[in-house]
Length: 193
Image (cartoon, rainbow, N blue to C red; front, side):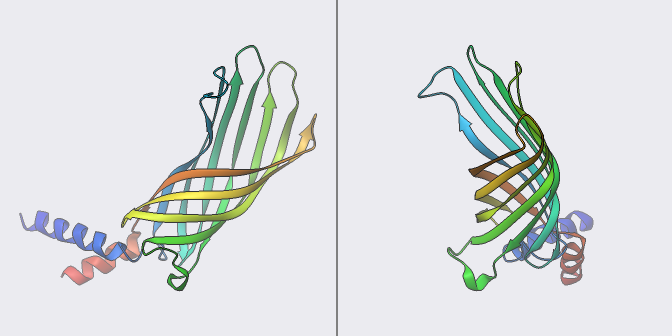
């Protein structure tokens, strides 16, 4: 019973501590962004979606480094199918608390670089090579450990194929979970004892 109480108190203190410390050194974030969701309301034969799972570790307060995956598809009745994919590294920088737009929100910048491609079925154009992106975002923390995000990015793809370079602007929305790292957990354990 003592052990259960210890873990319960540790968890509650961890939640309270992380309310102000989601982006501290040692913490971890993981989640996904959804972009370009189109269920064809204006054109009933088109479906478009993209998902980008990501995970990162805060190497310093406000600075996270990690990786991402990307998969997207666009298909239409009696037309070609376009597939996007990618894998690479990401970096994020969150502004300090002095730049808070809302009480529970933070502005951040995100940059990615990796390998990716865009392939069109039935002999359509394709590009495979280095993909990169850069842009600002906003995270609103609905709980101490869960953030809803909006991200506006410039995306580029340079490589080989029928098209050497492709670019676009994207607006994506995501959900990220921020978990305390070992250092934060040890700090909470020390405070409980």
